[in-house]
Length: 348
Ligand code: ACO
Image (cartoon, rainbow, N blue to C red):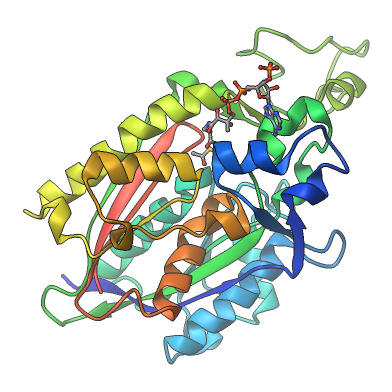
């Protein structure tokens, strides 16, 4: 069995900066409310027409591939995590394969929202460990700005999210003790509707208290109704307090699980890179685990919550700032819609 390692990493964020004050042009909110509850000062929004989720993923991938001293032609598998794909189907991985002129390799989309990158990393790890692939591109990218409701009714959700992309190239290593030590994945669908975008979808309201009115025709017509457009159910819905309560339990739980699987302690962590959900959640985890400020990386103030892109963007920035060094123990952890959560321990 091989060990897998991150051989190259990169990120891309769009140039359009929207501060909290900019959002007050669209909805009733304030810089003070947003900063106090989330720690976010500004976020990036992709160009409305020119930039796509795939396109941002491509930009991040180019950097990761170059830093891994490889080429797009040598990538032998693509895993793309996103909740904001360019199309309902097909997924972004094939679009990236096309845009980067890659060979006719396997291309997989992962739909695990905020924990999508950890799930994707874990899949890549298994493929490399078994020797099936040797150069896997893992991308997390989001263009959430296109599907956010900028009206006051959705302000608890819309102020949180931003756009961007991060990517890593995973390769095998024979260096003892180096690379991904383990990954740990979990889910609990009991509260799936607490953080969700219901429509367009095939449930037709089966699980929802408020069902859409059936259109007059005998078949179909429920993919997107006028009513869904008007009442905002085509936009993300979040019960913020339910998310918060579960996240602050599951984050520390899965981090402890990962550490104990490797006979390690919280004091062994050189850097925790949590999914950038909300600064208050990250501060809660830090306190719960008894970590110092220099053991936790946060950049949510600049980018907001970029969902599947948040961990690779944060890890990439931390690496560029010299906060991720050879031999360091890096812990990645995420929690998000589903609910799904996970952690990965990496010896850099
Ligand atoms: N600006 C101003 N006021 C707002 C805003 C806003 N953007 N959003 C909500 N409010 C108001 C509400 O209308 C409400 O007003 P009311 O008391 O007059 O009715 C009041 O603030 C409190 O609303 P809540 O929704 O109860 O706000 P809460 O204190 O729970 O804070 C928040 C909302 C920040 C989302 C919080 O619940 C939270 O941190 N949850 C965690 C969820 C999270 O981090 N999600 C990230 C995505 S999921 C993930 O990545 C894990």
